Structures are given as C-alpha cells and as structure tokens.
Length: 255
Image (cartoon, rainbow, N blue to C red; front, side, top):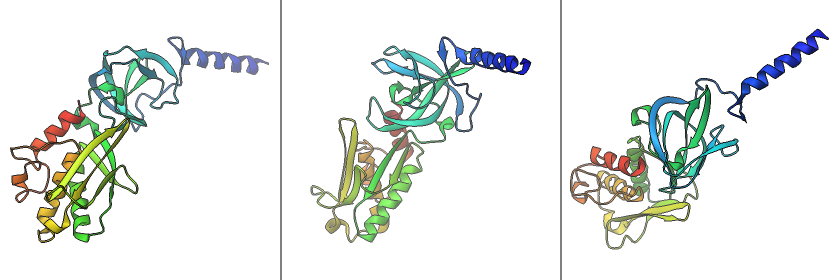
C-alpha cells in the first residue's frame, strides 16, 4: 500500500516538473548531440510565426511570434524541412531559445538571420540537382562544378534523379552556356545548358569553369566585373568561386 502511494506521489512530482508556463512539454537534455550552442539573433517574418516544443511541425504549438519580432536564440538544430519565407528554398534548420530550462523552437525558414558561419558546420541552403547529359566531358565538368560550390560551405548541391534543377546540354541562346533560377510558388526550379557544338574543342579546365559559372546563375548570382567565377573574362584563369562569390552567396542566403 505504501509503495503504491509513493509511486503516485512520484508521478505527481514528475507531472509538476514537466508542466511549464501552463503548457505540458517534454523535457529535453541541456545539449543534445545534434544541437549547436551559439548566441545570435534574428527577426521573424511579416506573419505570425509558430513557437513549438520541438524541431518538427508535428510538435505542439505553444505560442506565436508576432510579425517582425526580434528574438535572441541560444542555438540551432535540424528537423522538419520548410520552404524559406523569402527565397522558397528548403531549410531544415530550427532555432531555439530557452526559458526556465525548457527549449522553444522556431523554424529558421521564418527567421531573417543566421548563426555565425563558423558555428554552423553546415551549409545555409541545400538543393537537389540532376545531371541530364550523357557526354562524359560535360558530366565530369558538372561533377567538378558541384564540388566547387559545395566547398564554399554556403550551399549544398546533391545529385539525384528527377530533381527540379537540371544540368545538361542544349541550345544556350548563342552562348557557350546558359543558367537560370526561378520560383514557382513554393517550388524552386532552374538549370543550366551548355552548348556542346560550341565548346567541344575546349579543354577540361574551361568546361569546369563554365559549368561552375552557369550553376552560379542557378544559385541566383549575376555577372560580375571583378575577380569572380561570375566574370566571363576569368573563365580561362579560374575554375572555382572566389571570396567575392562566397560573400555574395552569404548576402543572398543569410538575408
């Protein structure tokens, strides 16, 4: 009988501990292995933004951030992917802050601001791409170009089948290559074409630079006149993005 009473008392204590600010929440460890601790701030989108008990849309909504509210965060993790409010690009990061020892999560997709790059250990945005050409030299150029952009640490391009972004060969509007980016509602699409009959006599270094340049347009980069892979005059001298290109990517994807 005494054991039964003690058991009920223990259950009551656990319930009281987990009842925080009027909401029943699941206690979390101070630092999960997949979470990164770093102080930073951001401003919520121009719509009410949900505050949840976990980094997933299936978690309990416990409150909302009012539009354009600045929030001080204490870390971030990864969870359910949502389309970014500003760019429509997929973003699976979730930012969290703590109150009374409990974490509260907000989807990064609705926050203008990012953790310091040195603390992220992960790219700002990820895209899936499909290489559609069967020409070995062009396939190799695209594979090298994907590696070049992934090495920036800002974006992650993952080759897969039937992706909304395609990398291939075809008519390039009179140029050696052509690249584009567009948004259809919540879906980001785009691609590149390299005109093989114009570049078949060019060496592998130029093809890599050309593919890297055209993928740059897919990433929303425009032509530049300085030291940049987006400067046409540099395609015979460099093959990879420069610091100028990396800085511009930060401007685009860190908002």
